[in-house]
Every structure is written in structure tokens, then in C-alpha cells.
Amino acid sequence: MTTLLASALILHVVLGLIGLACIHFALMQLIRREPPYGFVSKASFLSAAFFLLSWATGAYYYVVYYGTAVKPRILAGAYPWAHQVMMESKEHVFLLVPFLVVAVWLASRALQNASDPRLKVAASFAAATALALGTLVAAAGILVSGGVR
Amino acid sequence: MDWYTTLVIMHIVGTVLGVGGATFVEVHLVRALRDGVMSPEESAIMQTTYTVLRVGFFLLVLSGFGFLILSRLSEYTVWFYSITFWIKLSIVGVIAVNAILIQLRWIPILWGSAIALVSWYAALIIGVLLRGSVDQPLWIPVIYVAAIIIVYFVMREVHSRYTKPHFPH
Image (cartoon, rainbow over all chains, first blue to last red; front, top):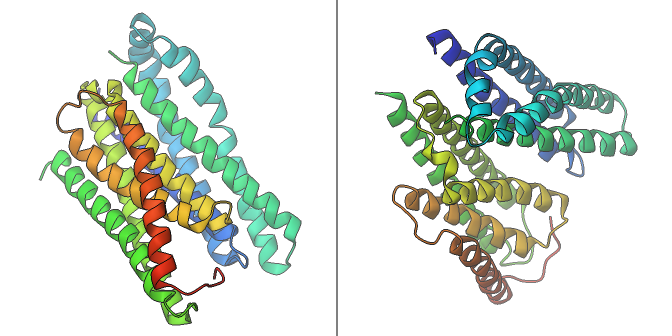
């Protein structure tokens, strides 16, 4: 693996984790009785930015290296489900996450101007769903890495 | 300094902040509720301690994934097949979910505190165990659950002795 590809893989993981941390912080504030919507807005915006950067670096690694060098090894190894189930799920589920986070950002901006309990609950659910899906995607990434033998 | 050493330091700092933070959350909580009322100053101390705890958690997770990336890049994938490693990862997940449940007040505060405290110490101890080999890793969840129950009853006793009845802040 070249240094550029290794850097892409490292950035993909690290940026995704920072994105998860940001949406986790946003969720923890959103579920308070009186959330600081300014903080939630900033945290969810940063989360969306980090997830999109994680997409870009992950996409480069996936297209240039994974499909030709890693996937065949996983499919020929003892754990082909690491690609067939985990990676196939991961590469579809991850598409949802940044959009959910953008929705949280927009909702928190609206909530800054006018209080709306139903929107607050909806934004909390969106943030919790993004966090849960992001965590599952990260766990799937570990399983895919473990599938390479 | 190589990446591995950097990650080890980051992991240790994260664990220290997390375990220390979790311990001091309980100490500060008991101290703050001795008179049954949490003052704004006591509340601020609690918030600061929670921030330290969250920073520790973030460092722990980030450095943990750093180890996994290093393993992947060096094709040393033994970690991925270790039951003990997956138990530790699950406990880290429990810490994150428990924090949300406490914030939502969907879990009684003493149970939440017991789970948080035991989970942090469990993550520390399992991290040490991962350096060697564990013969019977499936005992870890049993001991973990038993420890949560014991700590819950100890904390209930401590709160009933040293704090006055209070309303959650």
C-alpha cells in the first residue's frame, strides 16, 4: 500500500470518528431540557463536514485500492461475509449519515430562532439515528479489516 | 517517537482521564448532595468533571481505532479475532449508550452511575489483560455484570448514609 493510500485510510477512520464525536456531543446537548442550540448547530455542522471528508478519503481508498487488492483477499479467505455482508451494508448505510446530520444542523438553526418541542424531539431522533448508524458503520469497518487474512 | 508509542500514551491519558473522571463524578455527587441541594458552584464542578470524562472517552476511542489502523496497515490482524478485545469494545459502547440514557433520565441515576464506574474500570482492566492472554474470556461479562450489581448496592448505601433526599438537578 502506498503512503497516499495509507493516509487516505487513516484519514477516513479518524475523520469519521471525529464526526461521530461531534454528533455525540450535539445529541448530549439536544436532549437537555434547555439545549444550547448554538453549540448543537456548530457541533452538527462540524460533524457533517467531517463525515463528508471521511467519505471523500474513504472513497479514494475504496476505488483505487480496496476493490482490486483487499476485496479478493477477503472473498478468498475464511470470512467472505466480511465483504459480502459488512462492506456491502456499510457502503449503503453510510450514505444516510451525513444527510441526517445536516438535518440536525438545519433543525438546530431553526430552533435557535423559535422553540418547537416537536422539532426538538425529531432532531434528537435524527442525531441518535446518525450516531447509531455511524457506530455500526465503524464496527463494520473493524470487521472488514479483520476479514483480511 | 513512533506512532505506536504516541497511541499508547494517548490511550493511557484517555483511560486516566476517563477512570479518574468517572470516580470523581461519584465523589463530587456525594459531596454535593450532603445537604440535599446542588448549588450552582457544585453543578459547575460536576459539569467540568463530565467534560474531562468526555475528553478521556474521545481520546480512548480515537487511540483505540489508531491501534486497529496500525494493525491493519502492518497486516497484524490478531486483535480482530480476540474475544477479550470485542468484550472491551462492547464495554466502551456501553459507556457511550449509558451516558445518553443518564442524560435522558431513562435509567435510575444510581444504576447509571454504577454502570459508568464499573465500565470504566472494566475497560482499564481488560486493556491490561489484552497485553497477555486470557484463558477464560467469557467469564469477563459475568464478573462485569456482578460488579455492576455490587457497586449499585454499595453506592445506594453510601447515598443513603451521606446524602439527604434530593430532587435530580
